[in-house]
Image 1 (cartoon, rainbow, N blue to C red):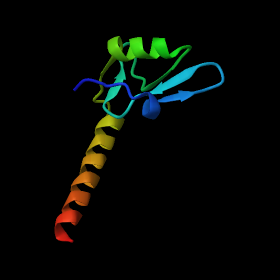
Image 2: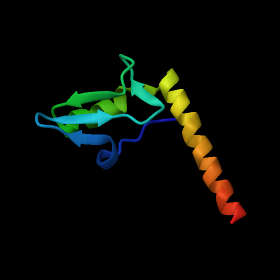
Image 3: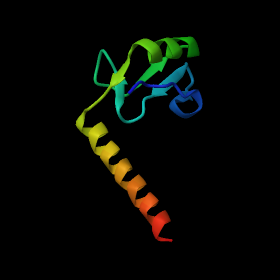
Length: 81
C-alpha cells in the first residue's frame, strides 16, 4: 500500500509551519514516528513521496483491526435494515 498525501485531512498549520499526521498504517522511514513538523508544503510533498513507509507497529495494527471491525459491523447493519 502506498501513502497518498491528503493536505486537507493530514496536514495542520501551526504557528511556525505545518504538521503532517500520517494515518494508521504509515510512518516515516527513518524513525517510528507518525507525525512530523515541516516549514513548507513543498517539504511535506517531498517527504510524502520519499520518506513514508508502511507501518505495522502495535498501535497501527490495533487501530486498523478496530476500524475494519467497525466498517464490517456498519455494512452488516445496512444489510439487516
